Amino acid sequence: MRRLLLIILGVAILLVLMIVMRDTAVAPGHNSAGDRLRISGLGKTEVIAVAPGTRLSLGGEPVEVRGIRAWSGLLRDPRGSPMAEVSLRIGDGVWQEHVFLKSGEWMRLMPNFAAYFAWVESRGEAESRIVKDGTGLESARWGVVEGEAVNWFDSFAPGTGLELADGSTITLLAFNDAHPTSAGPTPAIRVSISRDGDAEESWVTANDPKSHPKVWFEYFARLPVLCRLFAWEDGRVLAAAQSDRYRGDAVELVSGSKPTVRAAGYELRLDQVAQGALPVFPDESTAKEIILSLPERELHVREGEAVTWDDYRIEFIPGVTNYPATGKT
Image (cartoon, rainbow, N blue to C red):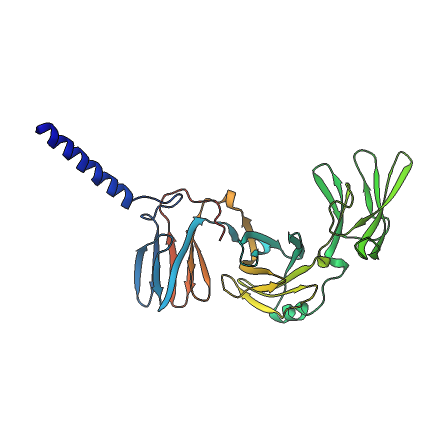
């Protein structure tokens, strides 16, 4: 009888432990018991325990915690340079996040999509530049491959080039905006590669990395879909997208806001923009962030910073956990 009672007692203890473990289970990479939000506003301060999926209200607006993860983004720093962080997706697909754009440079974000970002002096200058074509040869560059490096040139003046370590010399001879190809007229450059007195000339077509093994020609503005962004203050840009068949109106984007720019099935959103910033990539980050979804915008609150929304000041106090380095959303 005593042995039977001990068995029953042991089973009961095991069941209790299983229930406790179930109710306090931690999702991979997240400790829901340790993460908190400090919300100050309207004369009071609250500290609220949060986890992905937690719902609350701010000023009557519904708010949902969409995720908690390692932070990646732009760190404001006067030693930095003007930069924008954007995300891009096709249709309703997964966002390609943590894309950092430098002022005055084009960047190919996807095979058929390129973006240009520039910091300007005023909104008036942004409005003036956004309506201009801006798709001339100034968006192009050509480069010579040497080992793992590419030596880039912005000049298309005949005679531009360099001598490689193996003794060969590569020289630009000409640029043709409508070089005939089997796919139709396309921009191309003609180059000469000489070594030991022998010279070979070749045409290299734009945006085709297979066109030549040693010479690349990137003409960003001739890709099918383009987006240009101009900023004059932190957190705000004027953006416009265009494709072969469509030219969109300028849209003002605010960091974390729901409005985006769209063209030919692509959608781009603004995550951050700052006049002085340094990029922090996911694998470099030691900080964490919480993502709050509101009806008209999304707030990313990094630990150690305070974000103001409406009449509220929001701070994120993380628990001690290992978070996913990235969280594609």
